[in-house]
Image (cartoon, rainbow, N blue to C red; front, top):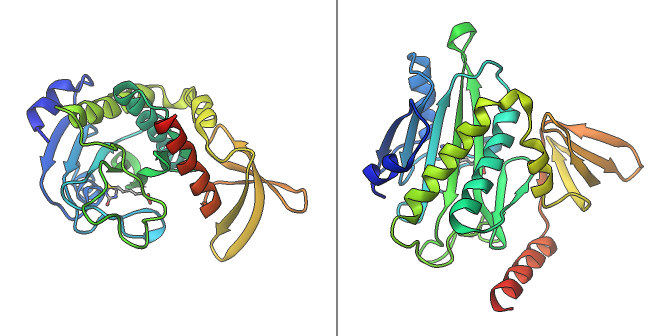
Length: 268
Ligand code: BTN
C-alpha cells in the first residue's frame, strides 16, 4: 500500500490519514485518541492488527498482506451507531462498484458479500459525553485469500474481494473511493437517502433465516430493513417484529447458492 498514492486519491477534505504496518486495533487506537480530544477526520489504516475486534466481542482475523483494516473518527451530531453502520455498508458497496465494477450485497447489519462470501465487516462504536461524544467506524476488508486459506472458523463464510492480485494501485483506489463515498453519505446522514440502496442490496430479504438475539433463537422471514436500520422479520407464528440488534445466522445452503451463482457468472 502506497500512503502517498492513497492520500492523493482521497477527495474528502479535512482528513488526517495515517498508515501503519501493524497495530493492536485501529478502532481501539482511535477511541483512545477520541477520549484525548482528537477531532473528526482522523483515519487510521493498518496492514495488520494483533487485536482486531469484530461485533459481539468476537476477534477479527487481521493478517498482514491479505487484508486492510481501517477506522474513521467521527463526531456526529446524533450518535446513531446503527445508522453509521448502514451508511458505511452502502459506502463500501459503492466503492466496490466504482473501482471493480461489481455489485456487492449486504447481510444485515454490517457484512458485505461478494464472490460468494463475506469480504468486509463493519464495526461502529460510540462513546463520550456532551461535547466529547464520538463514534469510531471500523472496516475490515479481506482483499485476498491468505496463503493456506482462511482459518477454520471463518473459512465457510469469508471471501476475498479480489479473486486475482490487485492491479497497480487498485487497492489504493478502492480505499480512497470507500472513504469518499462514506463522507458523501455522512454529510447528509439524517436524510437517510442511502437506506433505499441498503434495502436494494440486502441479500436476505424474502428469505427464511435463523436469528439469534442473546440466548433467544428465532426463525423468520426477512421482510426488509426500516429507515433506522432495524431488521423486520415475520416470525413462524405470523407475528412481525423489528430488531435493532441480533445476528442472522447465514446458512450453508445459502452460501453454496451464492458460490454456485458466482461460478456460473465467472464461467458463463
Ligand atoms: C464484524 O464483522 O464483526 C466487524 C469487523 C470489524 C473489523 C474492523 S477492522 C478495523 C477496525 N478495528 C477493529 O478492531 N475492528 C474494526
